[in-house]
Image (cartoon, rainbow, N blue to C red; front, top):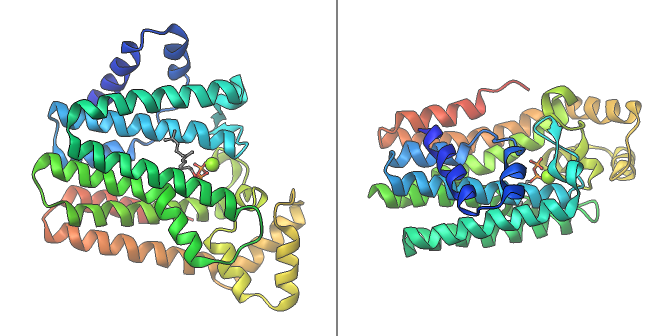
Length: 298
Ligand code: FPP
Ligand code: MG
Protein backbone atom coordinates (compact mmCIF):
# COMPACT_ATOMS: atom_id res chain seq x y z
CA UNK A 1 0.00 0.00 0.00
CA UNK A 2 2.99 2.29 0.50
CA UNK A 3 3.28 2.19 -3.27
CA UNK A 4 -0.15 3.79 -3.55
CA UNK A 5 1.15 6.60 -1.34
CA UNK A 6 4.21 7.05 -3.58
CA UNK A 7 1.94 7.20 -6.65
CA UNK A 8 -0.29 9.77 -4.91
CA UNK A 9 2.67 11.99 -4.06
CA UNK A 10 3.86 11.72 -7.68
CA UNK A 11 0.38 12.67 -8.84
CA UNK A 12 0.29 15.70 -6.51
CA UNK A 13 3.68 16.78 -7.88
CA UNK A 14 2.55 16.20 -11.47
CA UNK A 15 -0.51 18.43 -10.78
CA UNK A 16 1.90 21.32 -10.32
CA UNK A 17 2.84 20.95 -13.98
CA UNK A 18 6.37 22.21 -13.50
CA UNK A 19 9.30 20.30 -15.01
CA UNK A 20 11.89 21.75 -12.62
CA UNK A 21 9.87 20.77 -9.55
CA UNK A 22 9.28 17.25 -10.93
CA UNK A 23 13.01 16.81 -11.63
CA UNK A 24 13.99 18.10 -8.18
CA UNK A 25 11.43 15.94 -6.40
CA UNK A 26 12.82 12.82 -8.15
CA UNK A 27 16.18 13.50 -6.51
CA UNK A 28 14.83 13.45 -2.98
CA UNK A 29 15.44 10.19 -1.10
CA UNK A 30 12.03 8.80 -0.11
CA UNK A 31 13.14 7.73 3.38
CA UNK A 32 11.48 5.22 5.67
CA UNK A 33 7.96 6.63 5.20
CA UNK A 34 7.35 5.86 8.86
CA UNK A 35 4.46 8.34 9.15
CA UNK A 36 2.72 6.95 6.06
CA UNK A 37 3.18 3.41 7.38
CA UNK A 38 1.53 4.34 10.68
CA UNK A 39 -1.40 5.95 8.88
CA UNK A 40 -1.96 2.94 6.60
CA UNK A 41 -1.63 0.43 9.44
CA UNK A 42 -4.17 2.32 11.53
CA UNK A 43 -6.65 3.30 8.84
CA UNK A 44 -6.40 0.92 5.85
CA UNK A 45 -6.24 1.98 2.22
CA UNK A 46 -9.23 4.14 1.33
CA UNK A 47 -8.47 7.10 -0.93
CA UNK A 48 -8.72 9.66 1.89
CA UNK A 49 -6.23 7.58 3.91
CA UNK A 50 -3.77 7.35 1.00
CA UNK A 51 -4.11 11.09 0.43
CA UNK A 52 -3.54 11.90 4.10
CA UNK A 53 -0.43 9.70 4.15
CA UNK A 54 0.87 11.36 0.96
CA UNK A 55 0.26 14.85 2.39
CA UNK A 56 1.99 14.05 5.67
CA UNK A 57 5.02 12.68 3.82
CA UNK A 58 5.16 15.81 1.62
CA UNK A 59 5.06 18.02 4.70
CA UNK A 60 7.74 15.89 6.35
CA UNK A 61 9.92 16.10 3.21
CA UNK A 62 9.42 19.90 3.17
CA UNK A 63 10.48 20.16 6.81
CA UNK A 64 13.67 18.15 6.12
CA UNK A 65 14.53 20.35 3.13
CA UNK A 66 14.34 23.39 5.40
CA UNK A 67 16.07 21.57 8.25
CA UNK A 68 19.10 20.74 6.08
CA UNK A 69 19.44 24.41 5.20
CA UNK A 70 19.10 25.42 8.86
CA UNK A 71 21.59 22.74 9.98
CA UNK A 72 24.04 23.34 7.09
CA UNK A 73 23.74 19.61 6.42
CA UNK A 74 25.31 18.49 3.17
CA UNK A 75 24.22 14.87 3.35
CA UNK A 76 20.83 13.29 3.82
CA UNK A 77 20.46 9.52 3.92
CA UNK A 78 24.03 9.00 2.74
CA UNK A 79 23.49 11.14 -0.37
CA UNK A 80 24.27 14.81 -1.00
CA UNK A 81 21.39 16.88 0.33
CA UNK A 82 19.44 19.03 -2.11
CA UNK A 83 21.01 22.17 -0.63
CA UNK A 84 24.45 20.66 -1.26
CA UNK A 85 23.52 20.00 -4.89
CA UNK A 86 21.52 23.11 -5.79
CA UNK A 87 21.94 25.59 -2.95
CA UNK A 88 19.77 26.89 -0.15
CA UNK A 89 17.38 28.94 -2.28
CA UNK A 90 16.28 25.94 -4.34
CA UNK A 91 15.86 23.77 -1.23
CA UNK A 92 13.78 26.35 0.59
CA UNK A 93 11.53 26.92 -2.39
CA UNK A 94 11.02 23.20 -3.08
CA UNK A 95 10.15 22.85 0.60
CA UNK A 96 7.63 25.68 0.33
CA UNK A 97 6.09 24.14 -2.79
CA UNK A 98 5.69 20.68 -1.20
CA UNK A 99 4.33 22.24 1.96
CA UNK A 100 1.87 24.51 0.12
CA UNK A 101 0.60 21.72 -2.13
CA UNK A 102 0.21 19.47 0.92
CA UNK A 103 -1.89 22.12 2.63
CA UNK A 104 -3.97 22.72 -0.47
CA UNK A 105 -4.83 18.99 -0.60
CA UNK A 106 -5.43 18.86 3.15
CA UNK A 107 -8.23 21.39 2.74
CA UNK A 108 -9.96 19.00 0.35
CA UNK A 109 -10.03 16.07 2.83
CA UNK A 110 -11.88 17.33 5.91
CA UNK A 111 -11.69 20.18 8.43
CA UNK A 112 -10.92 17.72 11.29
CA UNK A 113 -7.95 16.19 9.48
CA UNK A 114 -6.76 19.64 8.37
CA UNK A 115 -6.92 20.92 11.96
CA UNK A 116 -4.99 18.05 13.48
CA UNK A 117 -2.23 18.08 10.84
CA UNK A 118 -1.88 21.86 10.64
CA UNK A 119 -1.61 22.10 14.42
CA UNK A 120 1.28 19.62 14.26
CA UNK A 121 3.02 21.74 11.61
CA UNK A 122 2.81 24.75 13.94
CA UNK A 123 4.36 22.57 16.64
CA UNK A 124 7.14 21.30 14.42
CA UNK A 125 8.04 24.81 13.33
CA UNK A 126 8.09 25.96 16.97
CA UNK A 127 10.22 22.91 17.82
CA UNK A 128 12.73 23.68 15.08
CA UNK A 129 13.02 27.26 16.32
CA UNK A 130 13.59 25.94 19.85
CA UNK A 131 16.26 23.55 18.50
CA UNK A 132 18.05 26.52 16.91
CA UNK A 133 17.81 28.60 20.11
CA UNK A 134 18.96 25.76 22.38
CA UNK A 135 21.94 25.15 20.05
CA UNK A 136 23.29 28.67 20.54
CA UNK A 137 24.84 27.78 23.88
CA UNK A 138 25.75 24.67 25.85
CA UNK A 139 22.48 23.70 27.52
CA UNK A 140 21.68 21.10 30.17
CA UNK A 141 17.96 21.78 30.20
CA UNK A 142 16.39 18.29 30.05
CA UNK A 143 12.79 19.56 30.10
CA UNK A 144 13.61 22.02 27.30
CA UNK A 145 15.17 19.22 25.24
CA UNK A 146 12.16 16.92 25.74
CA UNK A 147 9.69 19.66 24.82
CA UNK A 148 11.76 20.50 21.74
CA UNK A 149 11.87 16.90 20.45
CA UNK A 150 8.16 16.53 21.16
CA UNK A 151 7.42 19.56 19.02
CA UNK A 152 10.06 18.95 16.34
CA UNK A 153 9.53 15.23 15.75
CA UNK A 154 6.81 13.63 17.86
CA UNK A 155 4.02 16.13 17.07
CA UNK A 156 3.71 15.07 13.42
CA UNK A 157 3.71 11.37 14.34
CA UNK A 158 1.13 12.00 17.06
CA UNK A 159 -1.02 13.89 14.54
CA UNK A 160 -0.52 11.22 11.84
CA UNK A 161 -1.77 8.51 14.20
CA UNK A 162 -4.64 10.73 15.42
CA UNK A 163 -5.71 11.65 11.89
CA UNK A 164 -5.60 7.99 10.86
CA UNK A 165 -7.73 7.00 13.87
CA UNK A 166 -10.26 9.70 12.95
CA UNK A 167 -10.41 8.41 9.36
CA UNK A 168 -10.88 4.83 10.61
CA UNK A 169 -13.50 5.74 13.22
CA UNK A 170 -11.21 4.56 16.05
CA UNK A 171 -10.82 6.46 19.35
CA UNK A 172 -7.98 8.85 18.62
CA UNK A 173 -6.50 9.37 22.13
CA UNK A 174 -4.66 6.01 22.46
CA UNK A 175 -3.36 6.25 18.91
CA UNK A 176 -2.08 9.77 19.53
CA UNK A 177 -0.17 8.63 22.62
CA UNK A 178 1.22 5.75 20.56
CA UNK A 179 2.38 8.15 17.80
CA UNK A 180 3.75 10.66 20.28
CA UNK A 181 5.76 8.06 22.23
CA UNK A 182 7.11 6.53 19.04
CA UNK A 183 8.11 9.99 17.82
CA UNK A 184 9.89 10.86 21.07
CA UNK A 185 11.69 7.51 21.11
CA UNK A 186 12.57 7.85 17.43
CA UNK A 187 14.26 11.22 18.00
CA UNK A 188 16.02 9.99 21.18
CA UNK A 189 17.39 7.00 19.28
CA UNK A 190 18.37 9.25 16.34
CA UNK A 191 20.33 11.38 18.83
CA UNK A 192 21.96 8.25 20.28
CA UNK A 193 22.94 6.94 16.86
CA UNK A 194 24.71 10.23 16.20
CA UNK A 195 27.09 9.14 18.95
CA UNK A 196 27.25 5.37 18.52
CA UNK A 197 27.03 4.76 14.78
CA UNK A 198 29.82 5.31 12.27
CA UNK A 199 29.71 7.74 9.39
CA UNK A 200 28.94 5.07 6.77
CA UNK A 201 25.87 3.84 8.69
CA UNK A 202 24.63 7.30 9.53
CA UNK A 203 25.08 8.88 6.12
CA UNK A 204 26.40 11.96 7.92
CA UNK A 205 29.49 12.68 10.03
CA UNK A 206 29.39 11.07 13.50
CA UNK A 207 29.10 13.32 16.60
CA UNK A 208 27.73 15.95 14.23
CA UNK A 209 24.99 17.06 16.65
CA UNK A 210 27.43 18.36 19.25
CA UNK A 211 29.42 20.15 16.56
CA UNK A 212 26.16 21.78 15.46
CA UNK A 213 25.62 22.94 19.04
CA UNK A 214 22.95 20.38 19.91
CA UNK A 215 23.25 19.22 23.50
CA UNK A 216 21.08 16.14 23.14
CA UNK A 217 19.99 13.91 26.03
CA UNK A 218 23.21 11.80 26.17
CA UNK A 219 25.32 14.97 26.44
CA UNK A 220 23.06 16.31 29.22
CA UNK A 221 23.35 13.02 31.13
CA UNK A 222 27.11 12.89 30.55
CA UNK A 223 27.52 16.44 31.84
CA UNK A 224 25.55 15.55 34.97
CA UNK A 225 27.77 12.49 35.56
CA UNK A 226 31.17 14.15 34.98
CA UNK A 227 33.37 15.76 37.63
CA UNK A 228 34.02 19.50 37.43
CA UNK A 229 37.12 19.09 35.29
CA UNK A 230 35.30 16.78 32.89
CA UNK A 231 32.36 19.17 32.71
CA UNK A 232 34.72 22.00 31.74
CA UNK A 233 36.32 19.81 29.06
CA UNK A 234 32.92 18.82 27.64
CA UNK A 235 31.83 22.48 27.55
CA UNK A 236 35.05 23.44 25.77
CA UNK A 237 34.36 20.88 23.01
CA UNK A 238 30.83 22.19 22.31
CA UNK A 239 30.45 23.37 18.64
CA UNK A 240 34.11 22.49 17.93
CA UNK A 241 35.44 20.50 15.00
CA UNK A 242 36.46 17.54 17.13
CA UNK A 243 39.83 15.83 16.71
CA UNK A 244 39.99 12.02 16.77
CA UNK A 245 41.22 12.11 20.40
CA UNK A 246 38.40 14.42 21.48
CA UNK A 247 35.82 12.16 19.84
CA UNK A 248 37.34 9.16 21.60
CA UNK A 249 37.26 10.99 24.94
CA UNK A 250 33.54 11.75 24.59
CA UNK A 251 32.77 8.16 23.58
CA UNK A 252 34.89 6.68 26.38
CA UNK A 253 33.20 8.87 29.00
CA UNK A 254 29.78 7.97 27.63
CA UNK A 255 30.74 4.31 28.07
CA UNK A 256 32.28 4.78 31.51
CA UNK A 257 29.08 6.33 32.90
CA UNK A 258 26.62 4.06 31.07
CA UNK A 259 25.09 7.07 29.31
CA UNK A 260 23.95 5.29 26.15
CA UNK A 261 22.10 2.65 28.20
CA UNK A 262 20.51 5.34 30.36
CA UNK A 263 19.19 7.36 27.40
CA UNK A 264 18.19 4.18 25.55
CA UNK A 265 16.18 2.88 28.51
CA UNK A 266 14.23 6.14 28.54
CA UNK A 267 13.36 5.69 24.85
CA UNK A 268 12.51 2.05 25.51
CA UNK A 269 10.10 2.92 28.33
CA UNK A 270 8.16 5.21 25.98
CA UNK A 271 7.96 2.50 23.33
CA UNK A 272 6.82 -0.05 25.92
CA UNK A 273 3.98 2.24 26.98
CA UNK A 274 2.98 2.56 23.31
CA UNK A 275 3.13 -1.23 22.89
CA UNK A 276 0.95 -1.85 25.94
CA UNK A 277 -1.73 0.49 24.56
CA UNK A 278 -1.75 -1.24 21.19
CA UNK A 279 -1.70 -4.76 22.70
CA UNK A 280 -4.84 -3.82 24.59
CA UNK A 281 -6.46 -2.84 21.30
CA UNK A 282 -5.21 -5.97 19.48
CA UNK A 283 -3.22 -3.83 17.05
CA UNK A 284 -0.44 -6.41 16.56
CA UNK A 285 1.01 -4.73 13.47
CA UNK A 286 1.42 -1.47 15.39
CA UNK A 287 3.04 -3.44 18.21
CA UNK A 288 5.49 -4.83 15.61
CA UNK A 289 6.37 -1.36 14.29
CA UNK A 290 7.09 -0.18 17.82
CA UNK A 291 9.21 -3.26 18.59
CA UNK A 292 11.32 -2.71 15.47
CA UNK A 293 12.21 0.72 16.78
CA UNK A 294 13.80 -0.57 19.98
CA UNK A 295 15.31 -3.76 18.62
CA UNK A 296 18.14 -1.95 16.87
CA UNK A 297 21.83 -2.34 17.62
CA UNK A 298 23.88 0.43 19.08
C1 FPP B 1 14.98 17.15 11.81
O1 FPP B 1 15.68 17.27 13.00
C2 FPP B 1 13.93 18.20 11.71
C3 FPP B 1 12.58 18.06 11.89
C4 FPP B 1 12.01 16.73 12.20
C5 FPP B 1 11.61 19.19 11.79
C6 FPP B 1 12.03 20.37 10.98
C7 FPP B 1 10.96 21.44 10.95
C8 FPP B 1 11.03 22.61 10.28
C9 FPP B 1 12.22 23.00 9.45
C10 FPP B 1 9.90 23.59 10.35
C11 FPP B 1 8.70 23.24 9.47
C12 FPP B 1 8.82 23.56 8.06
C13 FPP B 1 7.94 23.16 7.07
C14 FPP B 1 8.13 23.61 5.68
C15 FPP B 1 6.79 22.25 7.32
P1 FPP B 1 17.21 16.91 13.14
O2 FPP B 1 18.03 17.98 12.51
O3 FPP B 1 17.46 16.62 14.57
O4 FPP B 1 17.32 15.54 12.36
P2 FPP B 1 18.22 15.10 11.13
O5 FPP B 1 19.40 14.44 11.76
O6 FPP B 1 17.36 14.12 10.36
O7 FPP B 1 18.58 16.30 10.33
MG1 MG C 1 18.99 18.25 10.80
